[in-house]
Image (cartoon, rainbow, N blue to C red):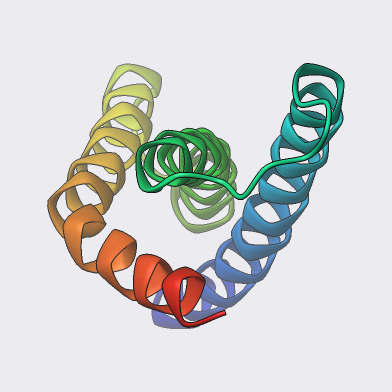
Length: 120
């Protein structure tokens, strides 16, 4: 089981990160397109707009990434080893726990992103 869990961790982490980056970029590019339509002429983004746009991108992409991570990890690590009800509950708990942790550390994530934004 240890090898299966180790492999599941690596694969789910990598695919979760890829999903996170892709969704983050998709949301960012969509936001840029709508922002370009709304702003004529383009204006410097305000702190409040930055906060709202970043929070949307970060939370949407994290939700997708945690879904990919939880499902892939649980399938590779435990599918066929647990009764289906326990397996499904474990997938849900893994997803919710990952998202809860993300929300808990979001203020730190935002602080780092904001400092980088305000420095440029």
